[in-house]
Amino acid sequence: DDLNGIVHPAVGAEMNRRVMEQVATDNVVVLDIPLLTENPRGGLQAIIVVDVPIETQVHRLVQYRGFDEADARARIARQATRTQRLATADFVVHNTDSVESLQPQIDQLWESLHELPQLPADFEFGGRDSN
Image (cartoon, rainbow, N blue to C red):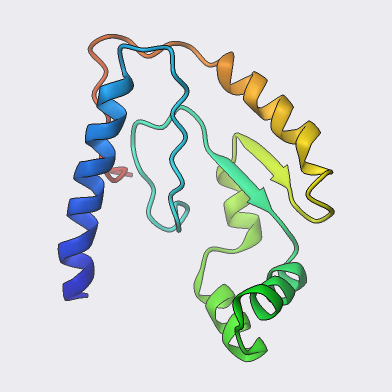
């Protein structure tokens, strides 16, 4: 907890700084925020969830990250459920099949992100959601 108390504010401040650098541009800014459902943030125009079934998550943690199956399941159980994550999503990328199957989804997502309204010049990116 002490480490989180030191690291999280610093990471949040740097993330805010980088977002604010882009406000006056037409750049699309994508933030990769672990555990966003568990720790909501204000000021996001959209939330993208990359979704896979739990069994796929377990398999990938074991195969590609070297987790013991019980540890993988325990980690997943401590996080928001798949249903909770999907409920927060504005866009869902289904990552169950091959990498090649992602391309059409990513193309559509990118197009949709470009259709989001431009942020106002006086926009201020917030930290954790107050809800």
